[in-house]
Amino acid sequence: MNSTIINNVRSAAFLLAALLLTTASSYALDLAAVEAEWTPSGSATPISMWGFVQDPGSCSGAPVPWTTGPDQVVATGGTLTISLRNCLTEPVSLVIPGQLTILTPQVFVDDSPEGRTRVRAFTHEATAGGGSATYTWNNLKPGTYLYQSGSHPAKQIQMGLYGALKVGSYVDAVNEVTLLYSEVDPTLHSPVSPATPLNYKPKYFLINGQSFAPGEAVPGIAAGRANETLLIRFLNAGLMSHTPVVQGPYMKIIAEDGNLYPYPREQYSALLAAGKTLDALWTPEKEGSFAVYDRSMSLSSNGAPGGGMLVHLDAGTRFSWILFIPAITGMGTPVGP
Image (cartoon, rainbow, N blue to C red; front, side):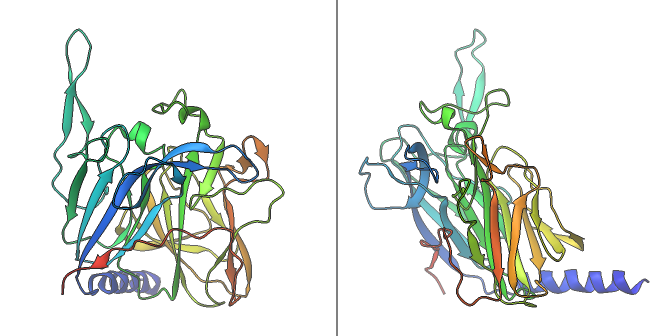
């Protein structure tokens, strides 16, 4: 057998073993779905959003500054329980595509002459105006996942109800970063409207809840040191496909939607379809700032070129200036042995 194939098989097996050997734990988290506002960089006009935040204990009614939902970091094989308070004016639910749980779809009868029964939500919901619901996932599968609303997703996800779940780690990676891609179409946010292929025309393209404007300094993210392997967790909560490119050495794509590839793929770009997640290993060969941009050309802000989906991975600098920080507060808290 070719030595390269043998090494790839060994590498894949080693990565899988590293993910599965993490000690199982139980995690509990309290979230709230709330009214929010996001002000694009370079603009003074806020856009109405919905977002997941740590549960403040009650519904205040005042919009909060929007960003992506808090990152959740949990162990492989553990149990995650999320209690959701709904401060919005319509029912909301919570799903994690790729993680196993029992779903209880919610249906309604539409107003057509036939009176058709249709699905409104993938699972049970927290009622509007302060209702709550609890969701549990057992034996968590390793990898990178989106958590998002499971109710009327064409409306609620594009309104901002999403965040990142990271389960386990890779033994080959010394450091890691999360790059969560999404878009905003302001015309669907006031009044709130569902997106369809015909009316979805986003004007802002975000990474980790932020988009830089033309003329601004490009955001930088600390990415460890030269010759240290970095795990890049790519997620796409938007409704459009994107193609992240890392300027520099090739990435080694190792997993998709939490499923480890039998043979890692070396490439400089990756197709990140809507709702998709990818895990990649990347090792900068020298110190420097390496651009990560969308090859699909989502590089504008409200129609002006020179903004959008572009960040820098800063390797070799101990202190990196950062214009935005992914929300990492509210990590699941171990509640069991």
